[in-house]
Structure formats: structure tokens, C-alpha cells
Image (cartoon, rainbow, N blue to C red):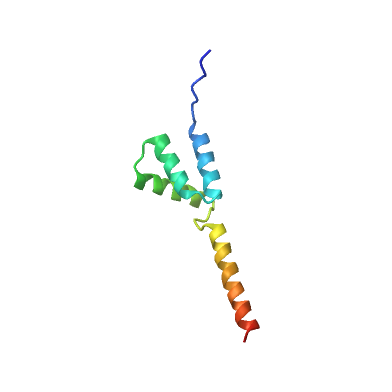
Length: 83
């Protein structure tokens, strides 16, 4: 028995894109959109950006932002301590 072909609906693709965006994987979301729709890179980036706006998903990479904030806070603390 051969496997059934998998059909991906528009809602499924949008759900996957939202998950990728929430995970901070914007470039993966763009690539997925391109693969599923045949869109060029520029169009895919516009669609993904619009989707992020509609779902209030920041384009900031939170893990990187947290690391930078921790480094700045650490530097300030050291500067005050060794004054």
C-alpha cells in the first residue's frame, strides 16, 4: 500500500509560519512560504512580514536581545563595582 499524498492547506501553512515566527525563525518562514507557494524571495518576505504584523510577532530575535541586555547589565555592574 502506498502512502497517501499529503496536501497542505493555506491554514496549515499559515499556522506553520506563525510557529516559525514565534520561534524567531523568520528566514525559515520565508523559505517555507517560497517552497509552498512558488513565490520569489521578495514577495515571501513581504507576506511573512505582514503575517508577523497581523499576529503581533516582533521581528526581534529575543534570545539575542536577552544576551545583549545581560552583557550590558553585566558591564554596568562591573563598572560600578570596580569604580
